[in-house]
Amino acid sequence: MIRGKIGILLLGVYAVLMIALSIIGGFRSFSPVPYWDMWNGYLDFFIRASHGDYGVWWSQHNEHRIVLSRLLFWMDLRWFGGIGAFLVPINYVFTAIAGFIFCQILVALNPEEKTTLTIKALCILIFVWMMLWVQSENLISAFQSQFILAQLLPLCAFFWAYKSISSDQRAQDYSIACLLGVLSVGTMANGILALPLLTLYAIVSRQSLVRIGTYLFLSILSIGVYFYGYTNPEGHGSILAALRENPLGLLKYVLI
Image (cartoon, rainbow, N blue to C red; front, side, top):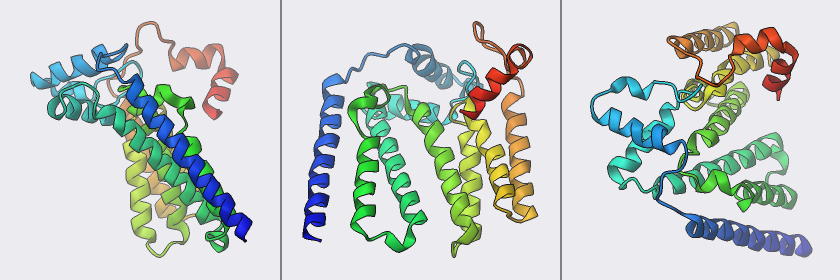
């Protein structure tokens, strides 16, 4: 037991060191200069929105409708001077939340062992792995919030969908799962898959017809709204062309 506690202590020191190095790397690498997609996806969006072009909030950025990130862009430019001093820290926050959710999933799957040293050690490792400097490009780029949210929100949606099966607050957890599935649509194009996959999950886990039907309705509605007025970006292949020319390759990509 003593050796186990010493091991947890050493893991804690390792975690603090790795996270500290990641934060230091963020400070050393920080630049207020807009980079790449930020010129049109960040600055141009803000200029158009500030001049009353409300449609720009839902307009495409390539294949994506990055509504949630645009809200963060607007906040950064309106309230924080537009130097990324808000957007970069929020990347760290979202990534930390993802690490926390993974730890919650681990504990939920092992309820009888949630206080054991093994689970504690795994939680520390999972959390610190999420924060490692190896993914520095996601952390220090002010334009990366949608890339993180496109993974985080569906992950949370599935976690709350799982909780809604057996928790004491089933209706509340189910409602949160639906909300997170809808919000996923506003991250990136792949976010539209969250609700259809939640529908499939509800079928496999034998949930009620009402829940399956609600997931299905939200899936159809969100996909319909997403593709209403959609245009294929120049220089990007279309989904229909990929289906005709390489259906197996497209299926493999979607499954991955």
